[in-house]
View (tube, helix red, strand yellow):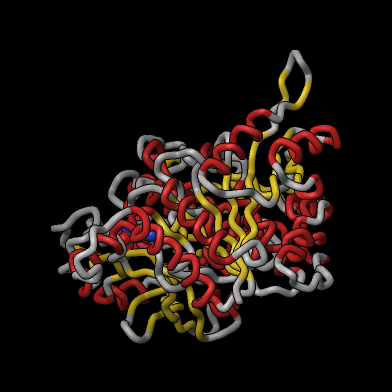
Length: 532
Ligand code: GLN
């Protein structure tokens, strides 16, 4: 029978609830349990796919083609498990399912209400995660802060689960803030007391508190929190500020959070295997050199818009003992600059990640041209690959008006064009080419050297594709199409072999990178950039 851990948040947002949930999952996995993770987002969008990256950050794509909250990326990187369609549930998804059922007549004439119809739908999503993953323990993070209007139906559903499944099968972790007040020079417990009271008002009794504080709260504070919040003192866990987020699971391990959960679940406490994680912490804390990589994009004002790309660069850096410093380059402002040498003067590599729409694309093309002409290691991802091909067509093959129909619908030379099965689509949400598709890699190419195998699976999120009509011409001028999706005859990877390191892919390798196992294309890009 699946067991459920729920992680709620109180007082303020941004306490690191996602990292707490992932750390708990990592510790339980390290003790031999199969874990799975899920996030509830109370907003009304069905998924974050149509949200502006500058507002909401990156859209993380699961292998089965779902566009999800960027927290799922943190989860996958921490627990090294692939998540799926049950992993990101929004209010929009729940309401849509309920209304679709109502229109279909599934409620047999009943008046459709928040309780039980909406809450049943939410509960089903929790149980579905357990069934489809086959996990021993599902860890669910509830987005937002307890007391928010939007999350009330989720909290009510969890109350019902706590009642139905009992405390042997459910465990509630409540993350709160214990602030330090200057002047009186002490830590304060009142915000936590109030937040736990809010939770109890909604019928949920927390089993553990995770208290974000600037330093260890100490015995007196823990005793006070225990008394006022009816939580055993051993279950009041400190979450102190750390330099390196990978230390957080180890901090919780020392406070036995995993043992406390397993005891409540009546599950055996098997030996934890955390050596690999401790090695990672050691590596990250002792990186020997540093290099700068330029990331050229139009969403650079919110670094979270590129979070998986940045994490993947770091992962590859860990492998080569190198700290990666990002030079954030706004592609739009690059359009009016002629001194690219100045912009890229300290950079050992240039990366152009994914993006949508025409704003800033000429700036990205300029950066790609600069990388190609100066033989600077280059990695292009999705839009980055499309623009690398356009740049090559324009400046090497002489097709001056080469473009994509995404930016210019009537262009004469659509090097990048809409996929034929996309032409009739009107709805924007969930209709891109999404998730895992196979790519066949040509032998004796850089891509083959990176992946060391012929068939790979990578995650996608795009609507446009390389137009095969131009393939022969580009090949003649020295571009190699080293990865192809054979089923649909779509270009997946391109490279220019007469340069040191110039490669780009239509898929998103950043979604599969792990701190202890960098994605092959990031690995080789950083290797080339640091000259190893
Ligand atoms: N805008 C491009 C497309 O839809 C690239 C998408 C991306 O970079 N994720 O094909």
